[in-house]
Image (cartoon, rainbow, N blue to C red; front, side, top):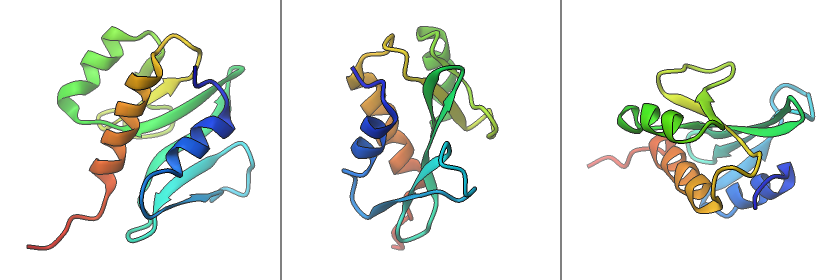
Length: 114
């Protein structure tokens, strides 16, 4: 069960061409960025005694996820239309969390020119 900050950071770092960053000079806020465009796909932080991760999501799934899981909420400190906060409280299966991370990674990745 993914509940620790270091677990989420380690998982996000398994994606291709990404790196860990601390842009606010605050160890509580870790972001995982794409190397090519520097876009963030995961904002990882502690809030209310849980680890939260903000992930970009397709608008067609946004409300479905929020309704399906109490621990998926409109994003804390980000555009609530395009981002969800996922609270790592043990109520969401790891496979679902991994799907959400993958979607955020894909949505923020640099688009290849045709």
